[in-house]
Image 1 (spheres, one colour):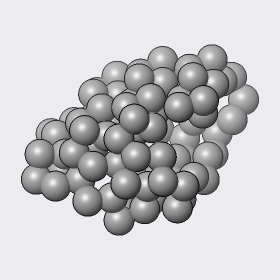
Image 2 (cartoon, rainbow, N blue to C red):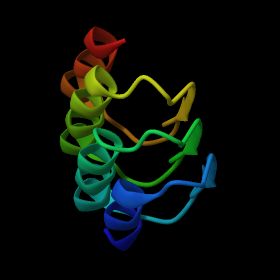
Image 3 (tube, one colour):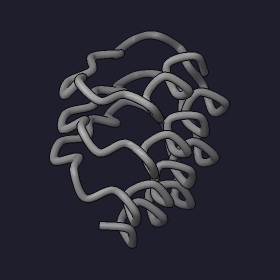
Image 4 (cartoon, helix red, strand yellow):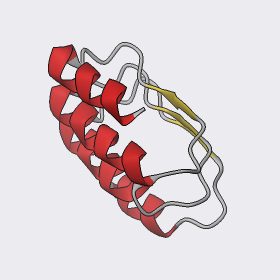
Length: 91
């Protein structure tokens, strides 16, 4: 969640690799909120982080507002139908 808060005000970071960190749904939600405001991050790797459907839905909301992010890896997160559908609609 600390990364999510820092990402809101980030003005330099363009790539963030956080694969295999077990951030879970709360972390996914924090990243979702932060990405709505971030204008510099282009690449985010959240692969294998136990995001679940809740984290997937939070990221989907962010993608509707974020036009800077060009690469998002969310593989291996078991987002389920609900999370996957929300992300698909956001794209």
